[in-house]
Length: 171
Image: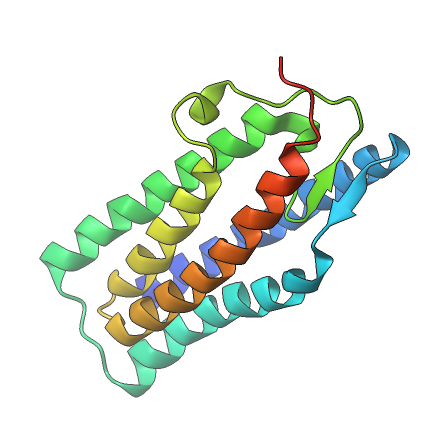
């Protein structure tokens, strides 16, 4: 179980790194008259993501979930791929990436990197991680609950983002 605890902690540290980048990018955006959209859903998103990490550990421990090598190693690879996709999104968006929905007037809409293929590739990474991280150690209940709640959140969030993005100039 210790390797799984370390994996969940590593993902938690990655989330903290995201928040550092997001805070820096929010300051950059605000300095350029950036406007935040749909702030009401943000606390739910924070609780959901913190809850995912806590539930991964709690379910594994309390329900005595086993590590099943064929499932665990496959899901571990998916977790790593999700991290790669997430950081590809972050690096592609540069200063425009944030955990909040913030639009800078006159900023171009980014269409490179993974955005050539999908409108919201970061949410593919979130969905994949939300399934794979718990299943790395057979925490199937956490995977199901997170996936359902995340789907509801993403429906709201993507709607907010699409309305906000419609204000950006196209390259």
